[in-house]
Image (cartoon, rainbow, N blue to C red):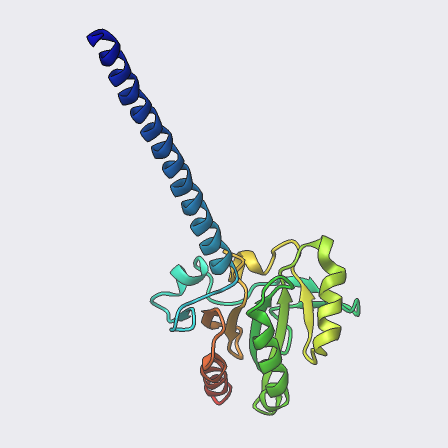
Length: 216
């Protein structure tokens, strides 16, 4: 009789242990699943240029840090990109010579790019009056060219827009292919500023730096 009781007691203990093991495994699985979701969310947020309250990551390039910022290159090279409307090619080095150039990288999948497009569009005429040109660089793939054309038409972008499907410009100016990502180039085609992300107040800062450069 005692052996039967002992057997039943041991069986209950084993059942509790087995149940605890299953619960622990299930908890570990959900922990792992939650971790994967967090990593995925952060990767998507960072790729789309999402910064915190500071408005993303910015860098004012000076002779002391330009090598770190742009792999040892202080000026734009001859990078030729195709205009999305098929009207020709644009060489970044010779485009809008004598003017300050704002280059911003965007993509159809980037939700935070849309406010930047709208803001730059509404201020484009003012920028031109200050001797500042704008160039929008799409980092979409060649498979989504039609979507790029649709977005350009939908927003009525008044400034030149080019494809960078082979990452010619991105590999030099925007190695992580972030969007939105803004670069300011002075009249001598020297890179003076870069900024990742776009939040309230960012455009005013970008505009001030560009205007100051145009007055030099």
